[in-house]
Image 1 (cartoon, rainbow, N blue to C red):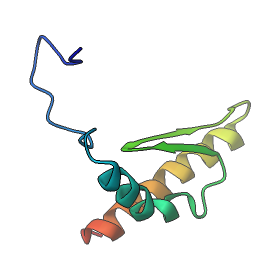
Image 2: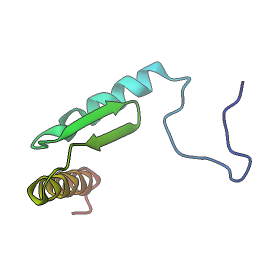
Image 3: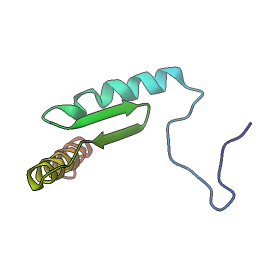
Length: 80
């Protein structure tokens, strides 16, 4: 069965037919979680950052982790 969208053509993501492509992508993003203090889940081309926020300090820590991820992406793309 084809999973897609009836509203718009979806052109993002890692092609599911390529096992090697997924493995190479995971190797590429292997250092993504360096310096991140909250939880980070990575699978194929999907990354989720999450943590429990019970105080303003927790909120600041989560924002700092988001900034670290942004800095990482700029560094690997050469736009930083």
